Every structure is written in C-alpha cells, then in structure tokens.
Length: 263
Image 1 (tube, rainbow, N blue to C red):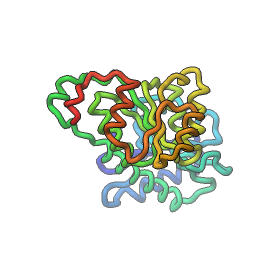
Image 2 (cartoon, helix red, strand yellow; image 1 turned 120 degrees about the horizontal axis):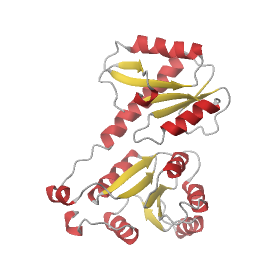
Image 3 (cartoon, one colour; image 1 turned 180 degrees about the vertical axis):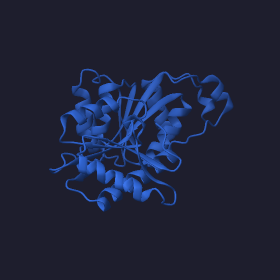
Image 4 (cartoon, rainbow, N blue to C red; image 1 turned 135 degrees about the horizontal axis):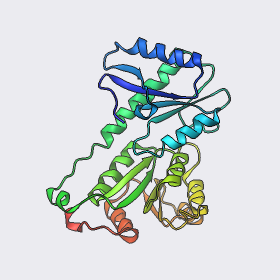
C-alpha cells in the first residue's frame, strides 16, 4: 500500500450509493488543496484509509480479511447507532461532507506523524551486517507515539520485528492472525484498559503462554500486584529504563545481537 504523492487514497466497503457519491465529491473538492487531497481507490487494497459500514456484516468480513495483510489501511467505521468502541475512528450516519472531511484530515495527519515515528535508521553498520531478516516478533500496544518510537528503536537494534497497536482491541485482533514472541502492553489505553486486555490474552489458548510486559507510569506495589493478578510476566515503569528493558527482553526472547552493539 503506497499513498499517492498528491494525497491519500480512500477505499470503501458497504457504503450506500449516496455515501459513495458524497465521498466522490470530497475527492473532487480536495484535489487542488496544497499538499494534495483525497482520491478514490479502485481497489480497496491500495487505500490508505478505508471507510467500512459497521452495520454491514459482509463489509466487516471483507475488512477483517483485508486487515490480515502486511500494511492494511487505517479503518474508519461508520454506523447509524452509537459506536460500541468510541476509541476507534467512528462517524455516525447520516453525515455531511464537513464532518467526514474533518475526520479524514485528522486520520491523515495521524498517519503522517506515525510514518515519521517509524522512520528508524540502523545506527550501526556492524549491527546491519550481523542482523538478517528478523526471526523474532514483538507486539507493542500503546497509544503514545513517544513510547512506540522508543521501544521500536530498541527492538530494531535487537533485530526484533515490532508491530504496533494503539488500542487493546486492535492488539487482540492482531493476535488472532499473527504469532508474537513477546507483548508490551500499556495499562492506560483508550477503551479497555491493559489489565483487562492482559486477562483476555491469558484466556486465549494461543497466547496464554506468551510473555506479557505491562507498561505504566505508576510504580506502586498495588499496581504491580494488580498486574500480576491480570497475568503479566513483567512490569516496566515509564519512561522505560534501557537496562530494565534489555533485562526483560533477554529473559524471555533469544537475541543474537551482542550487548556491546547497543551501548
């Protein structure tokens, strides 16, 4: 999936004829905007942003199939009823062009910021030479771009592929289709908190043994005990200390990168 040099590609699943017409109008109106506007993708797999009818079972099924891919587009759900998870990108029907455009612009800005965060250079030629394709995968569930950047850099140095999710629900969905060697999970998340997400991970036979590291700005004994009761293996306090982070990774994940590469 690559965004157009002149704007974002928009896909749609389950929209009505009138809503598709509205989307086309927005594309026409924004085409001459500085920095580029929006364009309708002929194939939803080429989209940067996908608008999905949450009330259409077929549309949601197609989205779930699409989301298994390597670079699925950001999803915008639209519904006639109150959204079940308001932390996601929702718009209620009926909606006009101004509301939809405002949401698309908000998401487009977030995509651009996330892309900048994940532009992580390899800092050592020696590391680049020894590190082939990552064999180990980590899932980082956190809504903070700062934390995603910090952990992404450190995991890349260890030749660990890092996937990210900004909500617990999105993280659980990723765990349905992918296998991870370790999970870093923030406690304070939009929607369901990290404690409940950790319990869900432990209830799933596929992930019940996967190491879970809770992340929190709180370091009290009560919070640590609550994390253990939820099923976590480790508890790191934010901002994450490098030595503590490396100690946790070495405890649960085999890495082939010598320590002196990372100092």
